[in-house]
Image 1 (tube, one colour):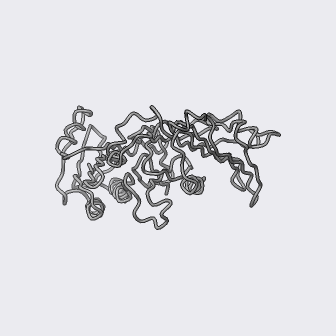
Image 2 (cartoon, rainbow, N blue to C red; image 1 turned 180 degrees about the vertical axis):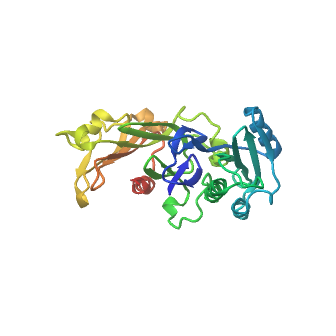
Image 3 (cartoon, helix red, strand yellow; image 1 turned 90 degrees about the horizontal axis):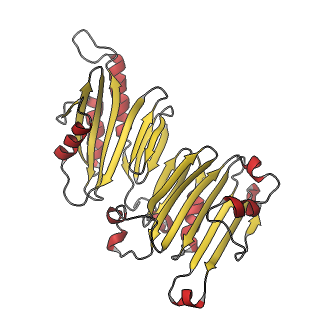
Length: 338
């Protein structure tokens, strides 16, 4: 099974299911032949209406018959999955839809604690029917699989209270295309790119952010990446053997990275534990006036090649609000290939 966690929302699916479309607040999965699952979400301030959510879905799919169903109407496995999500603190409303030979089952979900509103739906086809018109074995298998996947839905948009380490407790995870890491909850997703040979996920935290605005229900609606603040970037490059050639990691990073180490910051290289690594930290834009106005730009980064791999992993943090050493170290430690 593959775990996908993106912008505060997580789902565990069969290994054969892979992202077909990835958006800031949406994920479409396919099995290589057709779309099989869609996940959309947004943050809602105030009350939430399941009726409005489903009416919006019906408007988007005018050729389909979309309707809510009672809690006990779907297959038993689906009912059990929904009940588990409700026990975890979510509100849920199941729905079904049909358009010709195509049909689907899904659930609208709402977490009152975080404001997250999500829609999960699974695409199916009526491949076989019993003599009495009931779903045949293939349909029942698809429904059971959908139920088991729905049960894995997780809202990661709030602080992770289950983490015992104070340095990482107030973080949210991400896992996408073989990468996994954790980000402080005060950061919001800014930009991302997954191209062959180079993956990049960038987060942003504005400098002037009051305690109330640190709640992701507010920051998720802000214009990320604008004004004074700090950007936190996770990158993966491959193949390392081709990219580096005869260069050191520092020499490569100085030309390949957007937030590259500068000459003013001495970079350290090591080969501890069999892992090639380089790091740097310090102010890169400074003056007396900048120090007085607290407008210094700080930069820090770490570049390394995980043992036994041909990949280069990079974590950089640049901005006017430097990350504490323990926080940055926790981000580096969390970032890995899966």
